[in-house]
Image (cartoon, rainbow, N blue to C red; front, side, top):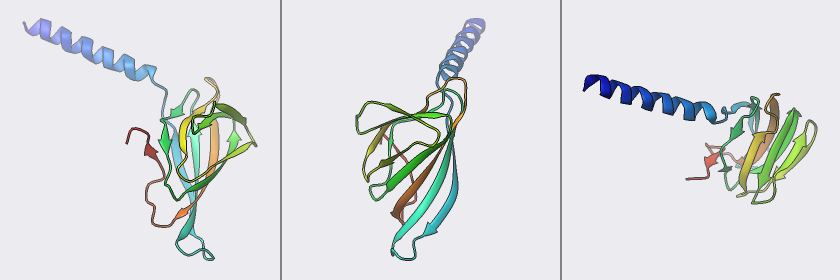
Length: 137
C-alpha cells in the first residue's frame, strides 16, 4: 500500500513538473522611473522595462483605466495584440500605444531563441498602485 501511494505521488509530481516546464517562462519587469508630473496635478509618469527570455510571454491583462501607455521595443522582437486585433510583431525601435482601459491580449517575445526587451511609459493617476491586472480578474 505504501509503495503504491509513493508511486502515485511521484507520478503526480512528475506530471506537474512537466506541465510547468511546458509553459513559457515569465517576464521580468523593472521600474526605472516614477515621478509626479509637476504641471499636471494628480498625474505621474512611470517607466518600466520588460525583459522577455526566449519564448517568454506575459499573461493577458489590462492596465489601470487612467493609464495611457507608449511602448518601444529596445531589443529583439515583441508580439503584441490589443483589444482583439490580430497580433503584430514589433522590432527594435518600433513603438505602439495603448489607451486607458485597453485589453492587452498578447505580449510576448516573438523569438524562441533570442531575448527581447521593451520600455513602457505610463501616464496615469498618481494614486494607482498596480500597473497590471490579469485578464481573469
